[in-house]
Length: 144
Image 1 (cartoon, rainbow, N blue to C red):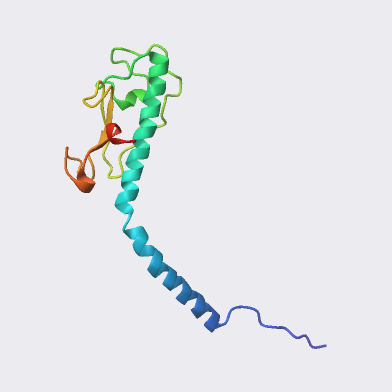
Image 2 (image 1 turned 60 degrees about the horizontal axis):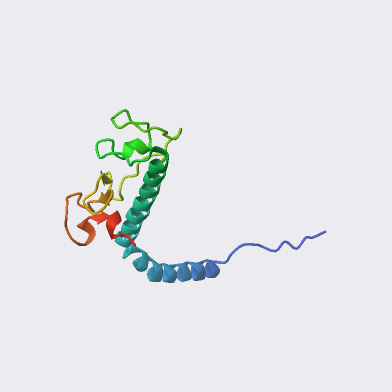
């Protein structure tokens, strides 16, 4: 009894063809991805600001006012004891944690704000007020 056992697997040529195809795809895709990290960071700032703004609106619905600048965004995480204390603070808070911007800086919060009822903003990549391009301030008053 002889068994014909056919070798299964990929030949070196097949593996090389796959490697070449993947290399070509990487050469086309990677530059497009690598050119956009700044755009991705700016998009994250916008999403974070919208999430914080939504949590602040829920806080106001429960407590009739926004947290003060002194109470800060931490009032969304833990019940503040800084006056005016919230009347009906939601058990568990309004956010799990206060996010930091993509450059590792905390978001700034003013209530009342300079640009509106409240201001939520990042000072950009350099963490310094003003600036231009990637270092520019990005605030809720600029979002659509």
